Amino acid sequence: MLPNLIIPLWILVFLLCIYKWKFFNASGITKQVLIAAFLFRIILGSINYYIWQNVIGHGDSLRYFNDSKDIYNLLPEHPKDFLRLVFGYYKTALPEDLHQYVSETTIAQSVPEYHMVRINAILNIFSFGNPYGNIIILSFIYFMGLVALLKTFLKSNLVESYTGIQKYIILFLPSIVFWSSGLLKEGPTLLLLCIIIIQCLYLEKQFDYKRILWLCLSLFFLLLIRDYLLALIIPNLFIWYFAKRTPQTAYRVFIVCTASALTILFAAAWFQPQLNIVLWLKSEQHYFLEAPDDPDYQFKALNGDVLDMITKIPYAINNVLFRPNIFHSNDSFRIYQSIELIFTWLFLIYAIQKRKHLFKLSPTLLFILYFSIELLLAYSLITFDADTLSRYRSIPLFLIIIVAIIALEGQRHPKEPNNSAKIE
Image 1 (cartoon, rainbow, N blue to C red):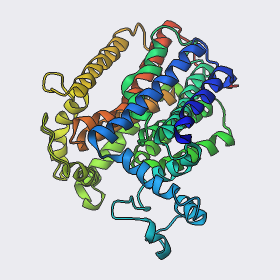
Image 2: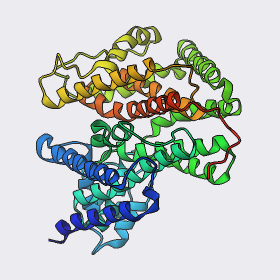
Image 3: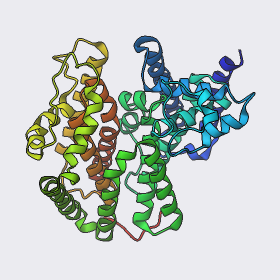
């Protein structure tokens, strides 16, 4: 009875928080819209988990929660073992006395996925082991990160006020809400990226050790959740650092540095096999090759050769731009995904066509844009399933949409950059 009562209780608490807290005051976005956006996240996040549980019957979110429930059940009689399994770190294998609590299907503590088990095990204390209670709590935390990012755009004078369709795209875009509001890793990944972007926007204006600390902590936790993202984030952060010193030439800095980095990577892959990034992409691709063939599409496998990868880049671009394809899919979920994808690209084309003058993006927006494009290309090369590609693509595509929205706002209200301004 209590696990079911906890759901309306947490919803009521969080709705009151949104309605009462000054944190949720954002120019152009009413509390009613924010409340609707939060409830929308709860609904889609719950649908996400329900599909995995009752339609598909297997998947990452089920594994995370089921393993966390086994750990949570230890709390009444074995609290010490509960704490060891949640907070302990074991470089090789679990201690012998903890083996009794794991099985062959349990996620190993040595892989990043286990951190999602830790998170759910802690949240189970507050939801009494109800997965939908966990979804509500996580949705609120992730929602706070997104609102904080929107408010930082306002404080940075990148946006004067959120008006018209802007706020509805950012708050209600179904794909990003669906994938980042459940128990999957997209939620914490998006939250940490929001925090990283916020710190970069502050650091553009002035150096602050507190912001550096937040940035380092976010990178550390991102390493625990999705370690491979740091391979793209850290190089782009270095470029961002040099670009912010000369914001007038930030475009050139990103173009030259990115082109130089790609040249070095391809040269290293060509002459030093142990530094071959294509082999790393191929190894990541093997995870998806183990799954059944996609009934709708044929994807191209990499063989580890640089020239082979270059010849397959057009297929990868086709994947990320047009898959799932409305003309090839019969599944209703894929048809929706393809329709949203079409409207997304139409919006981005509109944003480009609307450009009345050369609008210079700030170094942080360029950092978001380059990181997102590179991540999209990497996903399109290694992912062999249109649904998985849609899931992975949701975050970088969402970030590109945000950059487009800010660029459109800059066209309507062009401002001279003021790098000496302080964000209060």
